[in-house]
Length: 506
Image (cartoon, rainbow, N blue to C red; front, side, top):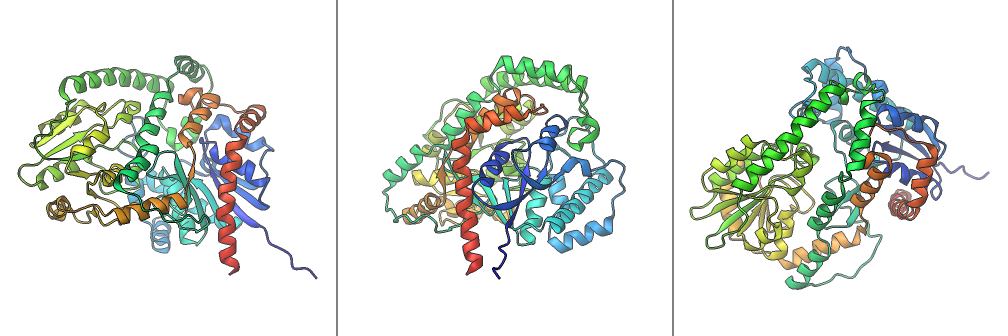
C-alpha cells in the first residue's frame, strides 16, 4: 500500500500590505500544500478576505476579532509565557508605537496593554496548536504583534520565510529573520575578487539611497488621491475606533484636527531647517558622521530597542570623540513623510557642543566620502562607509555587524575606546568581497517599494487611506497585471521551501 504523502502546512501573516496575499495566490498554483492565515486588517477590507475564493485557506483568523476591551489580564499566564518562550513582553510593548510615545490619540493604561498582550499570546498559541504549521511566510515584522508571532514560531522550530531588503538597493532575499542571511547554497556563483573601485561600482549599481528617494518622490504625491481619501474618510462609516485597539481614540474630527496641525508644524519645521541647518560640508578638520534614523520605524523600535533616543545617542557620541573631531549629524530625508521632528528636538541637537547639524538635502555619500568614521544605531550607512574605505560603529546586531571593520557597541561606557580603536582601523577588502558575494548568492533583483506604490495607488488612494473596500474583480485585475512579479516571488519562496524539505529528508 502506497504511503500517504503529508502536505506541508503554511501559515501566512496578511495585512494591509497585499504583497503576501499575491504570493499566496501564486504559490498555491505551484506548490501543493495547506494554507492558513492570520489577517491583521481594518473593517472595510475585511469582507473581501471573508468571501474571497482566490486563495483557498484551510482556516483564517482575524486578529482584532480576538482582542476585547475590559479583559482583566492574567499575570500568572503572562509570566509563564515569558519563561516558556524567553520573550520579554514589556520590551515589545514599551516600543510599540500604538502603546506609548507616538500615539497622539489614546493613552493606554498598563492594564490595557497587558490585557492586549495576554489575548494575543493566547490566540497565537491556540492558532499554532490547531494548525501545526511547518512554515510561516510573512514580511519583516514591524509591530509588536507580528514580531511576537514570529518569535513564538521561532521558539517552536517553525521555519520562517521572511521577505526582506538587503543593504543594497533593489536586491531582496528570503531569510529566517529580519537580521539573518541564510546561505542556502541554492545558487552557486564563483567568488569574485573586486578592487575597491569595482566594489564602489557595485554599490553605485545598487544604490539604496536612490531607491529610497524614488519611493519618497512617488509615495502620497497625488492631490486627487488626497482629496478622494479625505472625502471617503469623512463621509463613510468608521467602526475601527471601537473594534481595533490600533485605532482607539481616532475620532474623525480629532484626526482631521491632528492632520491640520501636522501640516502647519511641518511648514514651520522646514523653515527652521532651511534657516539653521548647514548645507555645505567643511573638510578642513576631521569629523565623524551620524545619519539620523527615520522615526517611528522598526529599525529602532524592534531592531535596537535600547537605543531609541537618538538625541541621547548623539550626546554619547559627542562626549566620546577625541579632541579635534566634530560630530556631523544629518536629518533623514524620509522624515518628510513623518512631518519632520519637533523644532525643540532640532534645537537640542544644535545646542550640543562639537555637533553640527546638516540639512536632509545634503547627500549621504558626500558625508561618507569626507568623514573619518560613520556611526549609526543600525543603519546601512555603516556598511556603505566600507566601500569608501571608512570603518564604522553600530549599536545593534545586524547582518553585517560581524565584519572586522564594523565595531559593535555593547556597553555605552566603552564608546570612547571603541571610537578610538575604529578611527585607527582599516577596511579589509577580502571580507567586504565575501559579504557582497554572500548577498549576491542569496538575493534577487526586485523593487518591493515600487510594488508598494502600485498597491497604494490602486487600492488605497495613493497610501492616504488603508481602510478601503476591496472587490474580487479589483483584486483579480491587480494580481493579473502584476502576475509576473508574483510568479517570481512565489518561485523564490519555492526554492527555499524545497531546500528545507530536502534538508528534512536528509
